[in-house]
Amino acid sequence: MVHLTVKELARDISAGGVPLDTARARAVSYAQNGFIRIRASGPRTVPNEFSAYDSAAAIVLSQIQDAGVADHDTLREASRALYEWPVKSGERDAGLILPGEHYLPQHPIERVIQGINRRESWSLVINFWRDMRTGVRLVDADLYRSDQSFIGRPDIGITATPRGAVIVVLDEAMLPILLRVPAPGSRPDRRR
Image 1: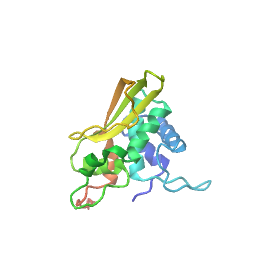
Image 2: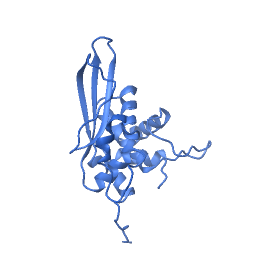
Image 3: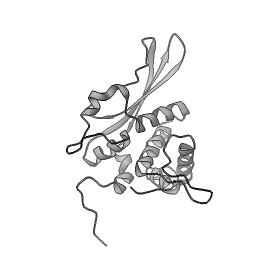
Image 4: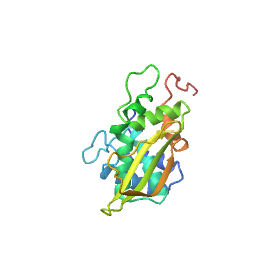
C-alpha cells in the first residue's frame, strides 16, 4: 500500500476544486480530530503517513464541508460510516463480498473504492433527526451502493423526526484514489 503525506492528501482533495491551502488545512484537521486514520506517526520532522483509503475518506469529508455542513458531530458520524461496518447491516453487506473473496475489506471505504473500480455507483447519505421528546439532534450516515438499501443507526427512536439529508456522490470524487489503487486484475501502465 502506498504511504501518503498530508501534502498528498491535500492534492487529492484539491482535485475536486478546493483551493490547495484549504485542502491542506482540512486534511490536517481531519487527522487531528481522528476523522481519518494515521497509519504511521512520525517524530518531529518526519511526516505522518496515510493510506490511499484515508485520502479517499478525506475527500468525502471535504465534500461534506463543501455541501455546507462542517460541524464535528456530522464529520465524526461520516467518518464512522467510512471506517466501520454498521452492526445491523450484516445481511446487506454480505452481498458486497466480491467474487473470489471470502470477506469484506477492513473498512467500508475500501469496498467503495473496489466497487467504483468495478463501475459500481456509491454515495454517502447523511440524515439529520431531532428527538422531539429530548431535543437531541441525531446524525445518521451510511455508505451505500446505488442498488442496495440504506441502513441507519439502530438508536433512532420513534420520537425522532427527520430534519434533512445530505447525499454525497462518490464516483467522480474518487478519481485521484483510483489512480493509486488499480482495479483488481488490471495491469500497471507500462508507457514511458
